[in-house]
Length: 487
Image 1 (tube, rainbow, N blue to C red):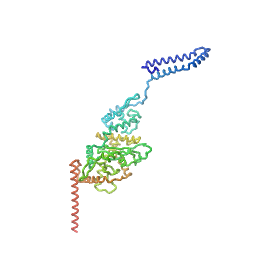
Image 2: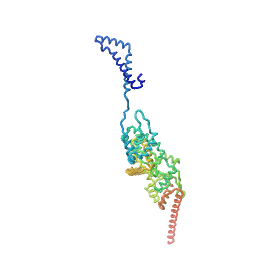
Image 3: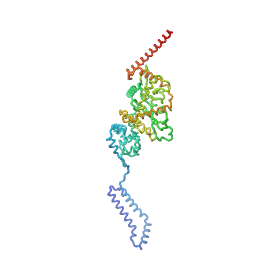
Image 4: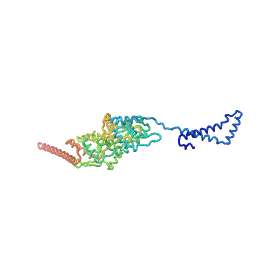
């Protein structure tokens, strides 16, 4: 056992040599009868058998010395883990230094400076320690490989080869990267509006469509998945017979997401998705969509509200358009046009999201929980891009077809699902908006302004509308009197 206390390689070599010599001498001593004469062989065999019977443990010293020799020889061999060779040339040279900004964004979705900022923010959560087995994968390589897979929709094999890491390594690290994006960047880029932001978004919506105090637009989009849980696989078939999960999102006038809920099966109706979401519980509890109030139509208090399509039920905080199947008045048609114009931002949001991150179009091959987490992370990245006021030139070629497909899929779903029952609680709000939209469209093209000037303008227009109605009524009465007098 003295072998284990040797401090250097020279002592181990000396011990190996001594053990080998001892084993050799022992073997020679026990087989010395091989060199005797033939007539002495029988006598020597007899003596050796008697000695072995008297000392049965004489073989153990040889075994111990031989084991020490084998251990010493094996310890001199430098062991190493076999790792498949990968190259980081594409990442270190082409991506980090040679690519211009346009090609960089086509690979990882965000510009170079924002990418480096993300590396700095996510490093405390993603950085690991070197081990005796292999060196750690740098944080920028992990993040770039994961973003490239989200952008391109390529397989783990292709992305890992491009970034010089193992396929299993990328598959193992991607959940950690997505968790870091959601937990560290989510509170910064995916949150409900503050008071000052709500006023700015409301003004932007009014400039877009002419309806006041809009907080956002809501809709749902189907995200294709593959191989969901077999026990409930039939629930994930949507109206187009594709397996999907529903992404419910609320966006502002700049197509940035304010709230998302993802993971409901593709067969679930839009209104049911809304009722199952945490946002609906927050609205019912009075946490959101309460302030600021605006006074319209001679004293009507208008709270913030969302714009939704006919897949939703009317709520005091959710306005839907009038049905196009029945007869509608001119004011209702005017309201529908303004409503559709204001709701276009949510279609643009879904189109931008799926055009930037092709993995959402190709289909996600994983569990439902993993697919929902991936969609959540892509919405975070979408908001990072939108809120940094980046251009859309890199995706203009695929944006319009994506929006058209989204619109056609939603129209098909609405026709097949039908319209849910609408409570009466939101009809008075919609009628007030119809009256206001009709007055504005008829008498002015001046943009709506918040504050006293806006309220004075509203009152003046309503007074003008009332005066015009009274004048027309008086004219009608005078004509009737004249006809009676002539008769």
